[in-house]
Amino acid sequence: MTNKYDCVIIGGGIAGLQAAIQLGRYKRNVLVIDSNDGRSNLCKNYQNILGWPAGISGQTLRETGRQQAKSYGIQFVEDRVIQCQKELAGFHVVTNSCTYEATTLLLATGVVDRVPLELQQELYPCMGKTVYVCPDCDGYEVNNRRVLVIGSGKAGANLSLVLTYWTNDITYINHDKKEIGSLENTLRQKEITYKEEAIKRVIAEAGMLKGVVLQNDEVVYAERGFLAFGGNKVRTELGHDLGAELLENQHIAVNPRTKETNVSNVWAAGDIVAHSEQVTVAMGEGLQAAIWIHKRLLELDEKNF
Image (tube, rainbow, N blue to C red):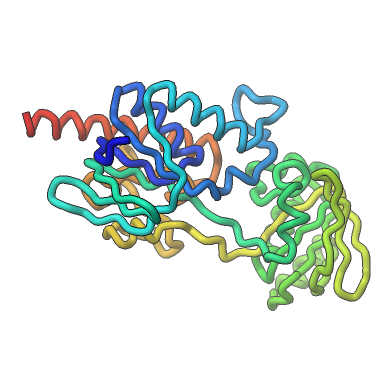
């Protein structure tokens, strides 16, 4: 495996894979570095994607995308990038085990949802099947169902209010017991049951959420669940270190047409960019970034000819 590439893509999720496929079709020499712990690994079923009426899992999308990219000669390595250094002729990309050289970079490192460690073992097998994080993606899945919002403070309260568009049977459990102020009255006005109590145990079987047991031993049953803890981690540290402009919410600002950051030859795509965090948006951004990366490489090829 060569250590010098036309482009190194950091992140092998949906945006990174779509960019890799497109760059492969341009016959570019590309490496995808993936730590394999992205958000799409957890989703058992995306149900709002054109062409997949019965849904498709994030794992299937990722594996299919990897094989498709490999068919165009794209190389993959499972590792974690710890540093990117901008040089005159490109970039040094340093991982835990190796250093690579790249003419261009695409950052597609994504977002990590904050889920308390003590709840992950039971909740993760339910993700995308009966437990969700995004009402735009999956609000439809709770239509007229008994829904449990598991969250923290105002983040959970606000999501509970959003979900009243689909269902009137909502219980919000403020697991962290963070203050919600006047939102408590708003919840009650909307007939949302509010419980400020930590969860002792999640009741789930084969990816199907059944309910939770609270610390006071009360059992709350539900058919579906949403998570809303707030404080999700936006993985933009590498972009920040390179000098990329970050917005107040820590997402990376990009040129809306090209997806290039303010740092020359550095692009960003997917959930780390400020937009609706959707699979199809990530695909589009990855593709768009790849088009403009190829254009830049053509310019550099001519300049160096």
